[in-house]
Image (tube, rainbow, N blue to C red; front, side, top):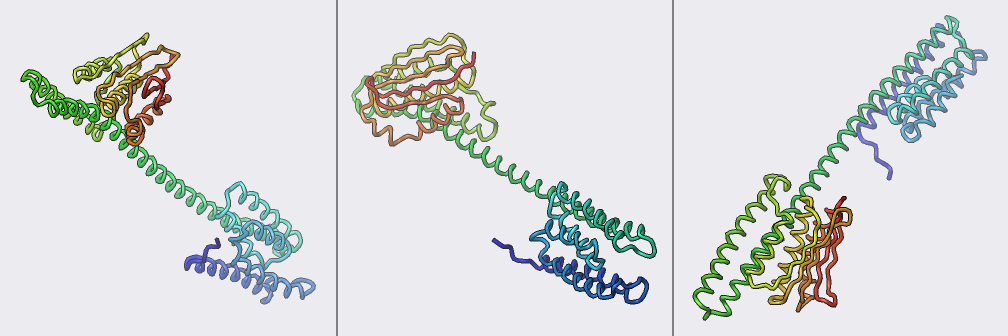
Length: 371
C-alpha cells in the first residue's frame, strides 16, 4: 500500500528541490555573466538547462527508486553541469535509505562521474578545482546521509529491543500465572479432596462411635491446617521464584500415600527406583501421583488404586497410577488438572498418557533421567 506524503515529506522534498535548482541557477549564471565561457556550440547550453530542469523534477520521485535515479543522474552529470544539484540530492537519498554496502559503491561511481566531467568539459581555471569541489560536496552529502541512516537504524534497534523485552516480560508473567494455577490445583485439590472424604463419612454416618467422629474431626482439622500452609507456599510464588520455595521430593510420595490410606483409600505402592532422583524429576513424579490420587478420590471413591514407580538413570522414570473409574466421562470433561499436569510433564521433556484400559483408568508418565 502506497504511503501518503506527510507535511514533513512535502517540506523536505520542496527544500531539496529548491537547493538543487539553486545550484543549477548559480552554475547557469556563471555562463550568462561571462565568468565562464559558453559551450561550443551555444545551443548545448539550452539543452543543458532543459536536462537540469528534468533532473530537478526527479527529486519528487527519488525515494521510490533511489539507486536507479541516482545512477541515471550520475551518467547524465558526466556531460551536464546543471544536473549537479539533483545528483547530489540523489546521493544523499541513497545514503539515507540504503545500507552502506550499496551507498558507498554509488559514491565511488559519483567520483568517477566527476572525473569524467572535468575531462569532457574542462574548466579554464583548472580541472582540479572543479573536481575537488565536486568530490567534497558529494562526500558531505553521503556522510550526512550515512549519519541519518545509522541513527535511524540505532533507534529501530532500540525499539525492537524494547518490544522483545516487553514480549519476554509478558511470557514470563504468563508462565508464572500458569505455575500458580498448577500449584494451587495440585496442592489444594489434594488437601480439599481429603477434607471431602472425611466430611462425607461424618455426613452419611452420623451414628458413628465417638472415637471415630473424633478421629475424623482430627484428620479434617489437620488437613485444613495443612491446606492453609500449602496455600501460603503457593502464594509465595508471587513473591519469589518457584525454585526458592520448599517443594515436595520423590521421597515425599510415601507420605502422600499414607495420607490417602488414612482417609480410607485402598492404595498399593510399588517402587523400583535404583537411585535418588533429581529435584525436578522428584517434584514432577510427586505431582503425578498427587493428581492420580485426587482424581481417584473424586471420581472413584472406595475403589483400589495401584501406583507403580520404576526407573533408573539413562532409562528414565515411569510413574503409573491405575484405578477403576466409574464415570470416565466426568474426568474427561473436567480436564484442568490433567491439562496442567501435561504442561508440567512437558517442561520436564517427558510424555503423559491417560485414559481407560482393561485394568481401569490409567495415568502414566515417562520422564527422562540422564545417566
